[in-house]
Image (cartoon, rainbow, N blue to C red; front, side, top):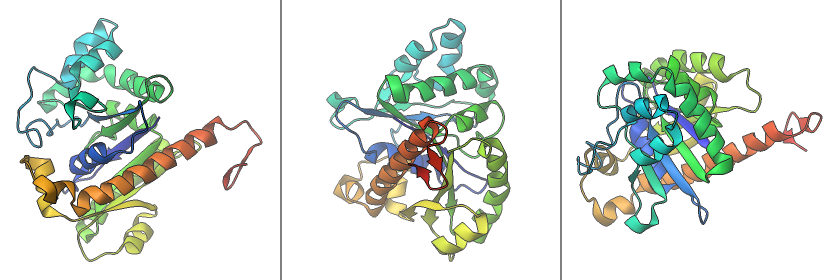
Length: 273
């Protein structure tokens, strides 16, 4: 299984929208599950947005502070999850709702690294792919442990000069964080808004575009504000391309895991032999 970290930069690039679209369309093998963990230190938005607040109980990442202190972080994590599956009986697409206030992030300083370790272990033990939404500020500070432990890290960026300018310094910081780790995947998810094409963005930011998502305002509004959406949403270009994104990111994560697991001497410049 895989851990994919989604990060952004100032200017509202749509990190949570991208990660949520990924969860709803993630390719699942029988018996496998996918989890979207809202780990943005600035707070989560899926419950109030896509779910329109219709969630029983106080599910929140913030509740893991107590569970961690009691030595039951993994059990506490399962207790905080919300079933996002359709039909509901499937329980194979899950959400860990984020913080309700940025002030709560301070209480998780010791928990972030342990959460990163837990997510990393799940690809071997629990059959769970973890999509980590780190928003615009979670790739640095204590929450940055979630970046360092991820199989693949993607910067969500739009095809505009403003977005590319804001992303560049964040990418340089990400390179410093993960660059020394052999086999680490770092790339872009391009939202096709703006005048710049995939090639232009990739060359400017010196990273490969791993996936493209259309600038689909109607479908994106369902993900950010809720509403049934109907067939127009379920068949939208955004969700179709999100499914393609999920397959590519999953395959990249698997190849990175194989690369890291390969015995010394079996890795060439092109990967495993």
